[in-house]
Length: 42
Image (cartoon, rainbow, N blue to C red):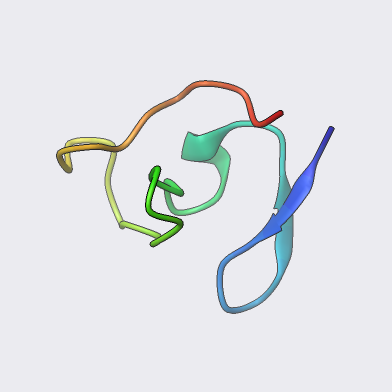
């Protein structure tokens, strides 16, 4: 399913769709950041 992410509450199906939500839940601006993933959200 999709989850809200980011300050604007955008919905996304993949981490990379939404400023790369990392495992910590912090959004990063690029997939090149350590810990970011393009895995699907559960």
